[in-house]
Image 1 (cartoon, one colour):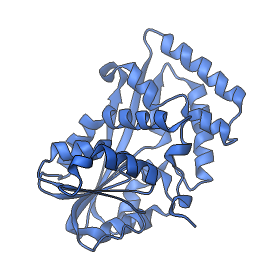
Image 2 (image 1 turned 180 degrees about the horizontal axis):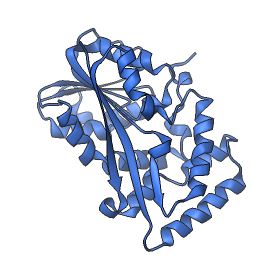
Image 3 (image 1 turned 120 degrees about the vertical axis):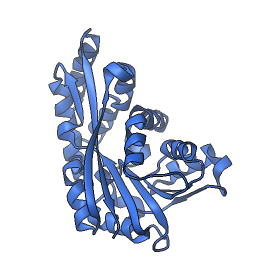
Image 4 (image 1 turned 90 degrees about the horizontal axis):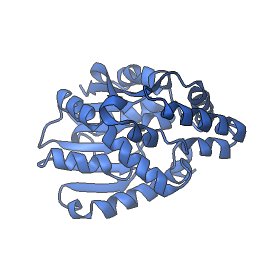
Length: 274
């Protein structure tokens, strides 16, 4: 079994093409960073800490961490060699100084015990089986008193349209059911507290962060929730082409409404290693 065979996300297979997916990941890093960075500081992330970033992808959040915490060392891990290669090329100037980038599984990082002050797992737990095992591996590599923040979403409260867009909800449900066949869980948000508890973390906290289209503008939302994502749902046989076209028409009508708005909601869960 290859290390990518146990997860529901591969960059080459999640959108209509890799270039479009990289752009979506960039905007996904931008859309909530103000709220994420505020909460990371609130949960205890400070300059000078050693930081482990799980599921670092193309390195957009990695770069923000390097900038926000100029005296911290960052270790960025991802299972996808395509994204790791992209990250290494983009952040070449940091490599060997404050940044280490490598391909590794969240279940077997290959890192020493008690090595990091703080760990961040952002939008990765929805894609993996056995999330408690992953959290236990992160706990192993944290120092005593080290902190883990898991940021992820729950489809029930993930993307809110006003007026409601039932065609989106239908396609999202098709994606959720399809990803479940590949060990994905798009309702992972409601489980994060228990995952931390069952993995042996203490003092758990759970917060919701929100981005609003009236603040960010509608365009970034239409690209973060890229309609082309659902083309992969059709390609995998999880939805029909007719359902996809119905959604695209409804989405176009939604965006043409002068008073339409969108909210994006993520959950941030926090725990400490005893």
